[in-house]
Picture 1 (cartoon, helix red, strand yellow):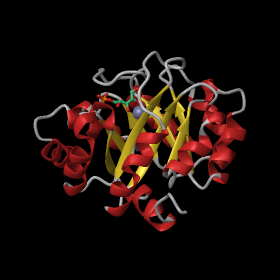
Picture 2 (cartoon, helix red, strand yellow):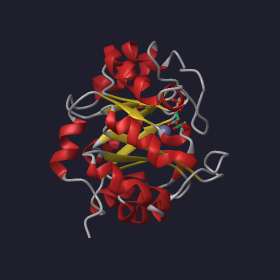
Picture 3 (cartoon, rainbow, N blue to C red):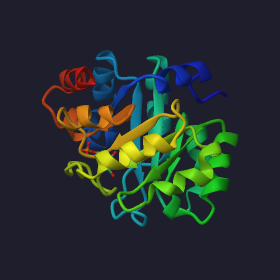
Picture 4 (tube, rainbow, N blue to C red):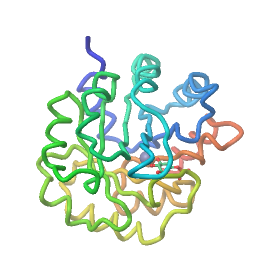
Length: 231
Ligand code: DX5
Ligand code: ZN
């Protein structure tokens, strides 16, 4: 059974600038309905925040939810971008790959063997991402760049939606962009809104994760369209 989107769909989406709705801020009692609204508005990359209560304090959702939404997202031509805020992510890669994840991103602080885990993400048939916390030096990407399909720069400390964008993230994104191959997608996550999108894009961010700015709005579809226009 092929759980993932086609390689060409993933390449195409990762080669463009996208606002990426984070379902962390969605109403889980109406998750399918809310996904349908943003998919109809043109959203194609869906961000799923997985938290384990250890790497970050909250516990959120797991592979069963990815499995529950994969058909809807893939049928609409979308892809699933799974952000693992969990310790020992190596124990969970296969479960998320089987559940339909197209991209799986890990934090280097969560495992002593980030290089190996990134390779195992690819071996499981997914694209591999590395996530930098605000305190993580940009140099960490240099040693594993061959194993990366994406870099995710946190512009808040992970764990909660609705926080303010850390201003120093703009300079950090610029430094990451200089270090990375030009075609490598650079994602930014935390406090993304109409004000922080233009400054992030101007220094090279290509995937802009937005949770509360979309699902906290009265009309998520309209909010998505406004943010996408800000790109
Ligand atoms: C935070 C998560 C984010 C979160 C962003 O730990 O990684 O993806 O959903 O939420 P907003 O857009 O509200 O900052
Ligand atoms: Zn996230």
